[in-house]
Image (cartoon, rainbow, N blue to C red; front, top):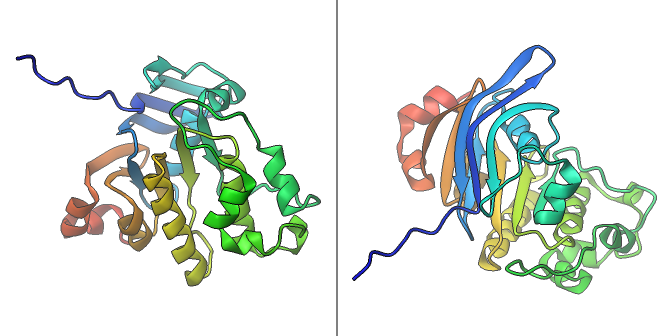
Length: 242
């Protein structure tokens, strides 16, 4: 009887390097995200979390190493081609179209359904984010920071990605919005979406993630299950404590 072959990860990052000018930001970053898995990339401010997500998305001009999505090397592709393959990126700074309404912002992000990925419509997204459903015709300039964060995520989902890169979703948000964002990420996992989330908030990560990779000074220093990280006080003190 032949052994069952392990399923290849949806995202595989190996030896990822990145620079901003002469500043060497990432040094040999390794991580994986499995299908239907939520992985938290954790670390202090300036550790390299955002740069890692941007490098995966092709938004860092100087980068090296292997990045594979669904087994295909994407490290040399431009961001728009990576997006068309099924990778969605939600930046920390939101970047909604402030003069457009909620519904118009969603239409900007629309892409055709893709095999193996959840298919999203505005109505499905309004069910996921009831706050947005109540302000369909509201322009971005009249939304709170938390509402804008929800809209940024919803607009990205309109592209029907297989993998979501989610940068600091709880940063600067009111506790009630943070809880709503955590519930949304859990529901996305139920839908079969894979998520790589950059996060400092340990409680948020514990609420949504299956595994964690902890980065410090541009290098992954710890990796394991989220439960293992919660039980490893020494690692949390060394790499996450302020």
